[in-house]
Length: 283
Image (cartoon, rainbow, N blue to C red; front, side):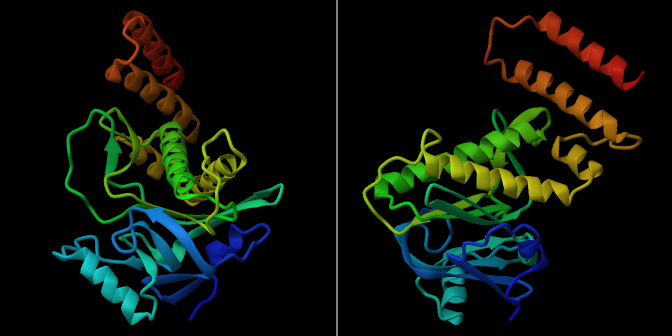
């Protein structure tokens, strides 16, 4: 059993050790917790509101089509002797999980995630059949949150994820993406009386910092071709690295005008900006 993956060591600063990840095999990551915690999430098994003692990331085939994924995930948990767990099913390589932590004023937040940016979920797009989880995020805080606080933290993690992906430029056919069609998120806390965990709170800001580090780590292992693909550009030949930001700006203008959420914006000005970007990139 491999205790820590290379990516775990690479992305660890001050290890808080409230979560203990172990690779059981190349397709199974088990995270044992120091003690049971109150949790809220969208995992296929162990989701909703409850208590968990561990978290499992299970890699499955991209064409996974089990008619009862909940039963399948439950069997995985039982086979590992961890029925009181939450199970993520993902097509991503679980051995490349990313760990990040943040701490301030006695409050800590730790996160583990597997990231795959295929099948983007885009605002204004068409419904798409659910694929196997691509962005799977587990967040644990030392803050004593009530059930309302857990719901607030889940909201915060979802908002921060959407914000970072929007800045990144994840897109489908020029429409902004805020995740993928199969994301799963789980948040947990020892339990307590704190009802607030939004971005106006310390725990919310720490959670957003953890997510930022996770996405930054993912992008550090990806190249220009991946980035252009994330933005939805099919023609990626002869793209110079210095053009990546120009392409991102081009896409941003197209997204703003395509969503049409600011009706009084000057479309003529937007076209002129796009012409300027084109001249710079071809100059």
